[in-house]
Image (tube, protein in one colour):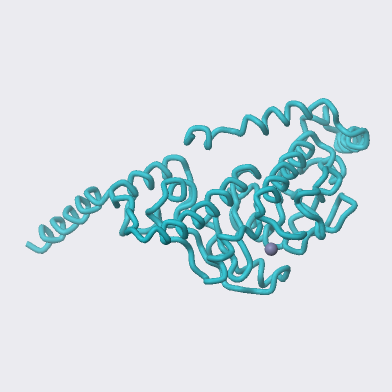
Length: 306
Ligand SMILES: [Zn+2]
């Protein structure tokens, strides 16, 4: 499972391979024009940011990302994580563009033509529909953390139940939560769709891949759309399990701190974010190593003094 999480997603890779051939005609023409204008050799050798927005929107990568967004949107709707036209999904396309879901459309009804192409300022460059106003939230995350390549925002009931209390489930109870998320953050309330709302996540977005939006819902970032959707599932399941466990009426069994440190060490090796990795009170390499360093420092000072 862990190794699988690090690897590229087979489904996405195969989707991208499958879409390499059927490029839309307008995309071929645009890419060819971009290539000719720039004096480059072949369209397929150009990076996304080197071609026109129209060519980028019609590239095989964009086609694959649209399918991934739609698949995630349908999963969110089937799991009842999105209500009405709520929730939104985006993914970075190269370094200059973002593909995102439109406003006023159920994630259960998404089709490829509905997906918008935006720049990092939220200007729509391709697509018949208007982008969601909550794209600003996604863009702030992309600009603040280059590791964020995809963002999923939605309103799952158990997560949102915690969001209306401004709290998160305790850590140390469920291994999936510890490994893939760690401590989730809680961003303060702001009016959705505004720049102030988008900026509420900024203090947390470096060290937290999962952020509760007070009185609103949840936002997760990851390297792919599928992984960001996984984080939503993992957090929602954790919230539900924690609430159910409390109803059993038995004491909760927490993972021993030494085992949490093993998970943190693993996360550090895998490159997963976790705010606890910055916490000197819980070093990933273990308390004994920290104590050893402290002892060495104290001895060194004593030797200086005497
Ligand atoms: Zn929302």
